[in-house]
Figure 1: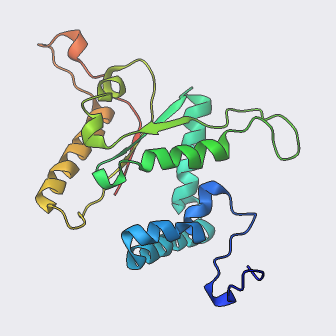
Figure 2: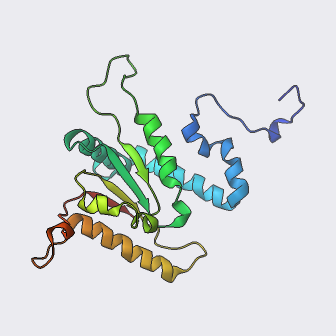
Figure 3: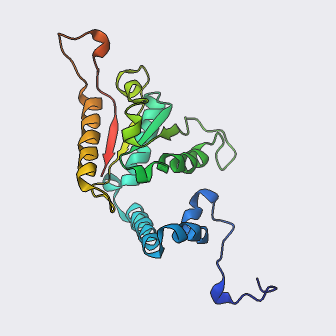
Length: 207
């Protein structure tokens, strides 16, 4: 940049230790800021910093990233779960599962440790998902009645951003009902066995 005569105050730095899956929080995020505005982008940065501080300072029994990571290891290694579904109940987050695919699968998709030794456990589940309202009509039957264990993370914004709050309230009720159904199932002596939901399927609901 010196050769082009660009003043230091007008440069955006990008360091070689910033992985692509983390680059959202760097100068690469400028493209996002141009779309959503600097105020919204600063709120994203502030939220990321807040979660970083929580991860560094919270005790283990109250540390949300640690608990979610341990649940993933538990389901993957002790229950044989091979995939995890991410289901946001807001169309603004419809591409968020794809972002988490890269973030988690590129980070955890390893078979060799840093010291060169092979790992002795399963190192990551396949991450997939879609906006919940659409997913209910495509693959929820597998989650409720299939033969595979698929842990689910429901992502549920409580307040809408410039939209219809009454519509979002319906989405909230829908999401909570799905979470309850995964846990409790559905039984009735008067219905056919193929309509029964056995329940006991793990999920988290993150508000």
